[in-house]
Length: 281
Length: 304
Image 1 (cartoon, rainbow over the protein chains, first blue to last red):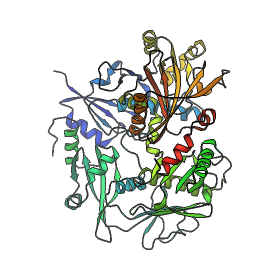
Image 2: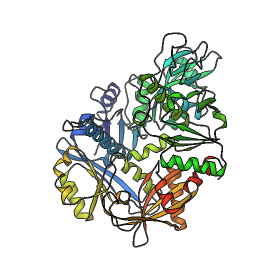
Image 3: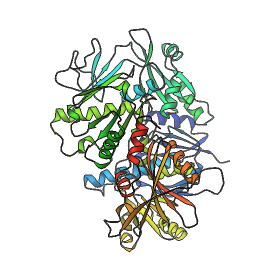
């Protein structure tokens, strides 16, 4: 009997990917490609006219030559995609301009290959990101607000002195790292963040919400975090929730590539990827 | 009130400003070169904010549309390069783009940066183009000469171009290019069947379609003069179903303003090469008289 093929795209030390593979190894054939493998492998990615009518006018198919054999990626059943950044270019490119070009070209190819993968892909590429939306904290909060979710009080300004927010936390732009208390000196761009309680994490996995603790469970009952994951094109999304000074439950952040997740998240992920296995609880 | 954002002397921005003045549309030009002198505040939780530029303060609630024709702020020529000014300029760009990507529905944006990103991968965008009912050229991305040879046996004459939006010029796979195939192993390249027919550039603005035919012997009509060929542009009417497909394609890509590169094959079918998310439309407007800037300003102002 042919095993289900699980494609894992991740760094060798990716803890979440390692845990998932360890729990599914008996029932799926895992093909793990690291960023280094993606550069070292040979590729064939085609777009050809489709034969049927009513569907797209062309279909994409990909093959990768890895460890001495060509693999047809149409045979992949599910993919765990943890590629946060483009693989580095081959050493043959010496000038900065050529290295930049090489990274852009390989990134563009991978984006198309990933978009054409069959089955469930967690997470699918969202251009320009290879795996889910890649947003700053401000971008996540803006996206959450755009789908009518309550978000932490957040103000962006190019000049903190001109637009101060009393009692709010000044953070650097765009990293959102806390700055010393008070209004920063000079015409400095900042993100102002309203005070909130300690954040609690929950995870959207497919259409399910897995809370990290009882408080997160009660928070998630009030905020439809699945809507944020859908808007971001993410089948897996960690969302931080907290209570603000007005008593509202608000979104305080999100991460499409969480590292440290509890076992129930792993079980939900295995279920979403179609690996019907019992993950130790 | 509309905001026209870019380098004011650059032809597409200049034409948009002139169109706004002709139409009597209240507008603000947000100059990239002087962005470090501007001031922006946005409250993401309420959607409120203000932009101060050129001595005028704009309430973001009054903005009906924004034309985004910007370049990387770090590469804008003629800007003040002190670290503080660079940081302010860069922050204004990023903050405004953050707001535009999640802007309220009453704000028309041409175009959101997230939507523009599809052009960063030509074969990815081609998959979306094919979903909208257009043929795309048979395409191969490979770093393997043997795979390329098989593709060439199947399709005959080929061209190649970048996979990303960087250095995107179409070139024939000729004898000169073949001498460099030894380097193919180091980086995948995109090859395509060389299509024959008439090049047609379609500008979609909202639901309006303005098309021009390019006549030239060059492989890439956009670079015809550089390569020693003549090129002429003429307005052309598209068949209704092709025009509808162009509007559907622009909608699918989330691009209210799009430059779609089509080719009319001799057999009457159409093939789509790619969609430019920030079309340098001025060349087409000035050569053909097509009122692209008028359509753009009208759409931004909510008049169609």
